[in-house]
Image (cartoon, rainbow, N blue to C red; front, side, top):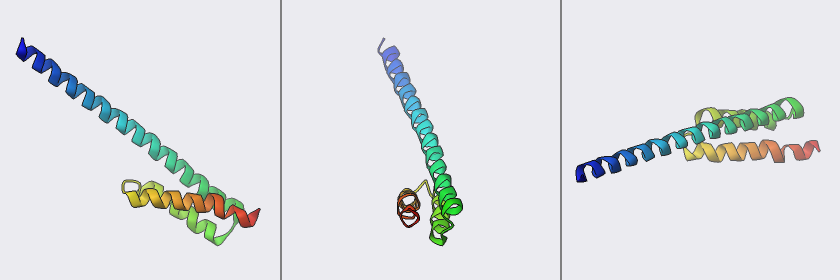
Length: 95
């Protein structure tokens, strides 16, 4: 009986770890899609609507960060900064 319970406990542990990993992976994929979408949006708005040289740079940076650097924390910071810059600061002169 003890062998059965220890096997069941190990199985439950394995299943919960696999479930947590799949949840983490699906969240990570959704997060990457979300960040890539905003990187593309900021590039579109900065590059196409404003025609401002800094906007092109920030839009390119956000797309680059979302595509390539998202796995490291510096990528997250640069995505946030470049999206914030492209979305909030560059629209100010235009408005």
